[in-house]
Amino acid sequence: MPELPEVETVRKGLEKLVKNKKIQNVQVLWPRIIEQPEVPIFETTLIGETIESIGRRGKFLIFHLSHYELISHLRMEGKYQYIEKDQPIDKHTHVIFSFEDGSQLRYNDVRKFGRMTIVEKGTSDTYKGIMKLGPEPLPDLFGLEEFTVGLKKSHKAIKPLLLDQKLVTGLGNIYVDEALWEAKIHPEQPADTLRSKEIKLLRQAIIDVLSRAIEAGGTTIRSYLNALGEAGGFQIALHVYDQTGKPCIRCQTPIVKTKVAQRGTHYCPKCQKLRIPK
Image (cartoon, rainbow, N blue to C red; front, side, top):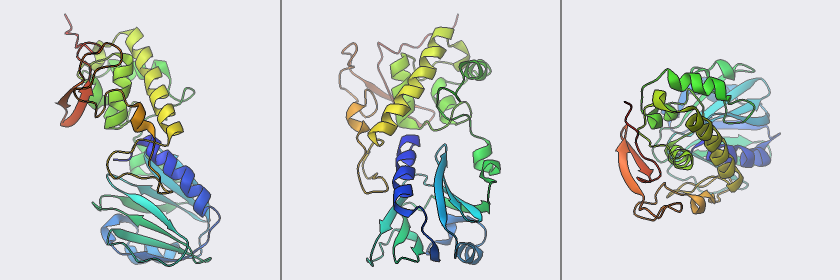
């Protein structure tokens, strides 16, 4: 699944490709991709709209148009493909945005889980999926005090708590594993048992891991490519995710893979010991 660094890389790439382009026509080939409005209205509403910029909130892409905002969530396998000239339509292409200059932006999705919705301009922050999100993982937005309070309210294991996007947004399976390894915290450690020093280390690890991943263009796992058709480079810097059996670079103990909250989870059994509260 594309995570925050991959979505941010897509945003940057798309903005270079389609900013200021005017939409001439829209074709929806798989109606369930469109959450709202109804497909015929979705298609006609976007005609004549110009893409002024592309933003991001958590893992949501937000196309800022002349009069509306188009919210797009890539889910598991969603990708955008920019086409300059006529090319055959791939069987996994589900939405086609045709521009007045003859180019196209195509939304491809093997699993068809992605969703799009149109809202009034300036109202994307009130969209149901976005309203629930925690702060972006940036030093000036992701406060230590608020993070601490949120952790102390929950006895859930730290990994699934971080995955639910409410304490901080943008973390998926890959980067939770990486941040917990960096902070030396076991993925099943109850959130309310974390010590002040651990919370401080974890907050900084989240910020650092996601920042480095964005700089590297994201992580390519299997089929994921960014908006320019390029593979991200962060996979070469992964310390625990997908490193099962390889030695931890800190202590040389083999990395272990288990399941936490039904998610494949990687950690170092020596560096990330589970503390049982007394």
